[in-house]
Structures are given as structure tokens and as C-alpha cells.
Image (cartoon, rainbow, N blue to C red):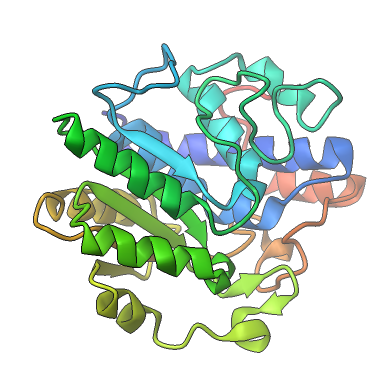
Length: 281
């Protein structure tokens, strides 16, 4: 197990990776990626029972599905820095014929990626199906998914939610990146989700709310808490309150960096706020 200081050091490097990848192509989604750094590091470094010798079946290991695929930069960075592929490949992000497409895809055979994602709303259905398959196969491993809060405006999410609860898929842990912002503005201004905690509870899920989604120890703790609640007849959902653009001060407090790339000056500013700790690619 790494220390919290080591994980936070890695977080600084991952944030450098994110802004550099998006800047290099003047294309991508830095805001949500930056906000989910602690989640991905906690998941892959401390929680997930996984194998970097990747195969698509994932037999006898935990599985993770990213539903809000536009935050691929953070996933690619953490996969690379966990050993799934060479860190140098991050330099190919969004380039022609790259395995690191803007939204994760399976055709290119990138280790760690089991489904194409980016069309919002689909990941919970996949997660529920994979989790049910593990139960039917007698596996004791878990399935994790991540979703944007704006994504919860998609009806398919709630169809999957009612299915998972109705079928007691209690080896499934969904996390919502609850930053309150989406591409067109604040969530409350675009389409309010109302009492989100109450909604999930009414659909039959065990709900955990974590207010400190950018605190590494808090994220590790809440994921461990969620694990402890599995196997008890209900799927589990974490409402993880994060800050879009976390770690880069001028990207925080606004939805405007949801899908905008920094220019040269802004890149330099963002990098100055995050120390290089493991070496840029």
C-alpha cells in the first residue's frame, strides 16, 4: 500500500498529464478529468482487485467501467502510471490511429478498456450486467462504475438502477461524480436532479454521500465503506462531491473547462500549480 503522501504526489503528476494531453491537441475534457483524479488513483492503487496483464474477460478480478467516457484523460493517465501500457503512449492522445481515442474505444485494443463509452447513460447497464454475470458464475469479485451527475439526466440510468436493485445485484458499486456542473452550465440551471440521495434510495440502492471527493484519504475511506456494504442484497452508490477542474485554480468554480483546452500560457500556469513527480511523458 502506498502512503497518502505518495498517492497525492501521483495525483499532481496525473494532473500534469491531463492538461498536457488536452493542450497538445487543443481538444478534450480537462474539467471533469481533474475533478476525478483522487477517485481514479484511490480505485486503481488501493481498492480494485485487478491485473495489469489485461484480458477482456476479467475472470476472478474486479471490473471498472467508465460511463462518462469524455473524461478519458484521467483514466488513460492512471492506467499508464499503474502499468497497463507505457507512459510515453500518453503523447498519442486523440491523434490519428492512436489507441487513446478522445472517448475510450475497444477496437484499438488498449489495455484496461472493456467497453466503448462516451454515449452517456449506458455504463450502469453494462456494470449491472457484468456484476450479475459474476454472481451467476460464482465469483466473489466486484464491479465498479463511474458516472457524471449530468449523465443522470439520461433515462437509461434509471432503467438500469431499477433493474440492479430489483435483481439484488449487490456486487455493484456505482459512483457519481457530483460536481454540480455540466457542459452547458450548472446542473441546477440546466436540469435539476432534485433530491438525488432520495431518488437512489427510492430505487432500492444503498446510498453513501461523500462531501470530500478531492481528499485522497476520504475517497479511499468511502470506497472501502462501499465495499463493506456489498453482498447485503442491494447495489451501492456513492455520491462523490468533487470540484470540476480541481488542482488548477482558474479551472475551478465554473463549467467552462468541461470541454475546453488551455492555451500555452494557461498550460504553463496549470503546470506550475502541480509539481512534476514521476516524469512527464
